[in-house]
Image (cartoon, rainbow, N blue to C red; front, side, top):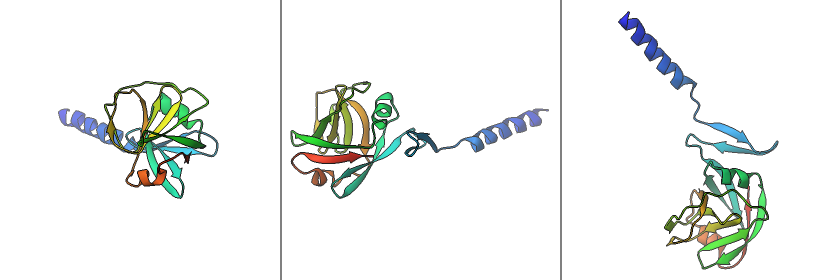
Amino acid sequence: MKKLLIMIYVISILFSFATCNNKNTEMISDTEEITKGEDNMLSIEIVIGSETFSATLYDNPTTEAFLKQLPLTLEMSELNGNEKYYYLSNSLPTNADRPSNIHIGDLMLYGDSCLVLFYENFSTSYSYTPLGQIDEPNSLADAVGNGNIEITFR
């Protein structure tokens, strides 16, 4: 009887692992699909000039509201030699935190409507709601240049 219970227990564990699916999708419209990985992260593309960057976004209410506005092409303004920003026409839900350090490729929301893409590492005392991160930001600073720039989020 003990062996039978152990066998049933082992089979039920194996069955639960077999039914887990590490990849699912969330539809954001009839034609667009955002992919969710096993860690509940979402992927989008950010197009700057002739370069396309993949970005991984956090699965949170702010990001969900941002995704509903995609695709977006924005004329982002330069600020402080380390970021590009744009004030969205609609407010997004926030959960601001003070990160202390900003990293190249961070995509964040300042306040409830200011979308910010950082292209340099630096320390900060400001609070932001994190949206995500460019996966491979090595050429980001060169792509965005020194002035205002058109950036497409899709």
